[in-house]
Image 1 (cartoon, rainbow, N blue to C red):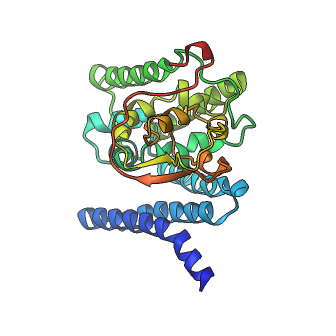
Image 2: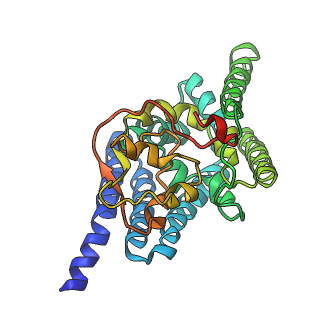
Image 3: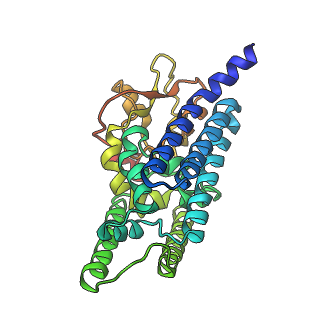
Length: 312
């Protein structure tokens, strides 16, 4: 009976997510007549359910395996099946092209759900649990940054976002560049974009000894996600009654969030840089950090900078 109760507790949250994604798939099936959507969203929901179950069931030192399995299942599917086999550009440039052309495709639906509306619910959970770029980067050896963030380099993501938007605008509006969903041009764009992403991400990670350097300084997607993730219902919370302020959570945070600063203000972790990876949760020796559901609005970012004399 105890084992059954434990199993139910471990599976229930993932089962809820599986149900939600399955209902989205059924909605799109009824709207379009394509049963593909049921398979697509059902698979994503199943991936989340499996990872969430393993995260809750495994011992603390193995909990990251749950997130990594979900990350691999979704990342390989999105990039390999929908991208290369389906010949659909799932990068942000593809999203801009489809958006300008008024074409409803997997890319536009994906960005709408995972990166614009979705963050209102789960913040930047996509970055922690499903991104196909960090799916590869998390195999690198620099999982925990040692020196904090490099000052001002975060502007790089906004420059990349602007450059991508301008490039697509020029091609689409001035050069009258046309796209057709599923053609070889999409495949070439997807291949070129991912070569650029992975190459720059791996080189940068090696230079600054930080797996998530690409996320912090180059990736353009957080420019969209940071806007709506301020309102995320799912956020981490430090129980001040259990916390002994040892700082282990901050030392292990891959995104350099100053978690204890939020705890001192008796707030949830309101940083839009949090990717909901739960590393802080399972690294805490006092079991003082939990994922909570509530409503608040992120404002000030507390981040560890490389130059600690100017932490803010």
